[in-house]
Image (cartoon, rainbow, N blue to C red; front, side, top):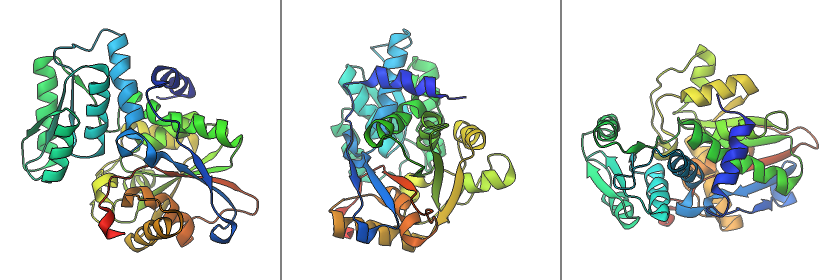
Length: 310
């Protein structure tokens, strides 16, 4: 279980290590109401994941669980790998990142540039994950999960605390969901203060399917946002928080995600990955329609994308 107290603790722990990202009000002629964009894509390493990475790494360091000679290990060729490598480098411990053999060379190069030791193993992510867990067990490294760890989710939830300080109040927060760590943290931070609307691609509906089934279930994953929102199953933490806090779920199409991403570039010069644009796509496509006078915040959570496609 993750609560507001966990997020408050995370905020204290990572203060001064992460950026306080700005909010931008959507122009009246572009908005169905009072809508604000939380520009978390400006965070270190280009995504919100730096918050959870710092909370996890420093928390383990405080408890004496972090061996400075071995450091951390993570299985991720994408945003989680970059964020945890950055956090480890900042506090001066090594990071080992396991990726499948199919990981794009550009991502491997970025991880190495961030100071990580990259190990390519297995044909699929699942094999890289198993190898990373084995490394953690054998070497005594701290394992940093991409989303389903309390400290990872609580760190992400500090975005919710910032929103409260920046906007004073809000009715609704729209947040993209893959494995559910970001949603869980924000929902815990804002429990009793705002309704959380989880936005997922209709071809990667991990939370939507879990809510329908009453438990996490495996789903088929495809589409343009699968690189960041492609978890085959919602995390246990994300599911528990979604049920406890009454998170709503809406689905958006690849076409609406692409259109939202293009719109935000053309009108606000925001360079977003497809997964980050999904949250705004819910508004732009009408998948979520705010009530009259409703104050809405949209989390734009990542910028690691190829800008030539904009």
